[in-house]
Length: 239
Image (cartoon, rainbow, N blue to C red):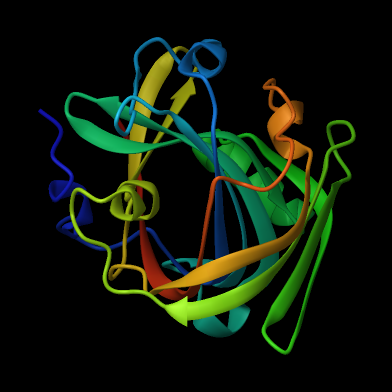
């Protein structure tokens, strides 16, 4: 049985790091599970909603990123874009990252060394005017990969209800990573996302294809926006 409430509870003890996630777009495509399965460790089950597997592209701003021992004035900010799908291990739902782009080479090196996550340095830019956002990412390390979005921020939506597709896609607190043949799980803690509608105007998505899947042609099946949350980050634990 999958417990979708327990991951949202804060772990005991002190956090290992602090971050602020801001101006997030959650763009999702439905992709056949058999195409994604080879890209995910065998120790993880794919997490489907009504028999459908989703892959998400999430561009956003990382602010005040720092380990807990570093003073706030020394934290740093950068844009990030991740490509993720949804998985389960021992009844615990989470995300598995197919790739992550960051507009900071230092952040990429630190995340690869500390968490073993597939980060790539990329050039990114974000602009907003009259509620319309333009976001572009162009990978600078690890081969060419580009993505761009243009979307309109919509009206606030009600709180994501447990059991809904929006809750399934957005409220994820565990991440899984396999390193050296060992599966590990990390956790973040934050309040539930305040979510708004997002109207896609244009999309040219290449990161999904670069991860080893068919290119995402056309607009995402679902799109949501959030102003963001303040996040506590907890270290990886062996599964």
